[in-house]
Figure: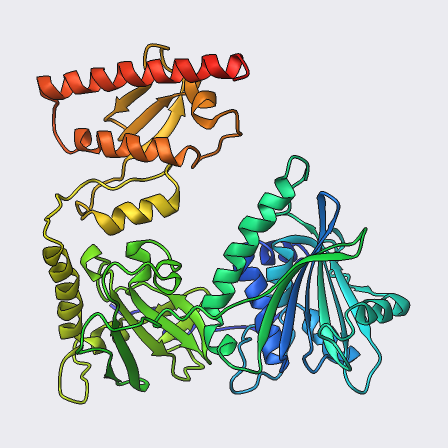
Length: 511
């Protein structure tokens, strides 16, 4: 029988199919986190040769109105700005540029704002400005030309902080993440939380740049009504390998992996000291998140932790971190960077090459995994106690508390975590154990008593929820409860109901 299979697909010409304007909506739905989106803008500033970058939150009383990113980079001419504001605009990236796809400015901005305005000035040209308004962009790729008098005014507003003769201002309006109603201290709480997270994220991703004497990122808040700038601080580098002393005298070590399709890849393997409380160790994520590979592209951290299918995360590898500077791989044969620059896809060839990667003394990379595991286990033994493995906590408990529990207690592998949630129960119950959904259910009726009248949320009442987890996690680790355990549960139930009712009485009396 003769095969009719074509090894090459035959064609009969071509047809131009430009993107529908709704492509802008897809572009703005890339799943950018707020900190990741702002970091993408700072990357552009670094590519422009900026020495100083200011991230400026503007408020009008209790209401947040705009976010601006200002830099003293080389700026853009009108032609350059049109290219920068074009979706997928082709520009020449330098050999060490952080930009790649020509979409970061637009997708990062429109993921979080209904309008993005860019005003820029070079040393030899007048300020020029363009604005993408989302409602206009989705109907025909129409980009607004900013009035010349405003471009001058915006550049002048930031003259000498940091713009002097050249630079760029990016302005976000209609920021989706901003509180809709700023009263009751919501704006202050939002700024405190957001600026802290933003500072940690930038400090981590850009730590190699921030460690230089000639580069600074400042986060500031200004009230446009009064002109008062009441918050202004520099972002500090957060080096995920900056421990005071190594967890093992044998490390760090450099391993070299031979990859047939690309050449050699260097891996700098570190072992953190056990039980570190430094931000450089703890700010990355959970115990499972922070171990593994830390990939850098042109000195910018683009992945913080993860084993990229080389192996599964393991609590005993909590101290293992490997720095990898990505080699030039323009075709993505070995590594592919996500558009958001928050992760790396490694080919199976990379994982295979790790099995035979060696250091200068001939030690294999898999031995590093064994060594990091041993340091963690030995530290547990030296503490004088062997803690029993538990089912970990899940949704409903604050991430920082979950992280501490995971640091302190060994976890039973591959077990669904214990959720903690509020639900309506009989008033004679403070809590209920739901084995089917593996949940500790707290009585909604007593929520106000626990929160002291404050507004609740998914991770509210961390103190009470932590205590409930410590009291009750063992129930889920057994198939059934014995008579003594049932008696304890009833005892705790009675005492907690009595305490919650007493607290409600105090609240009603205004005490």
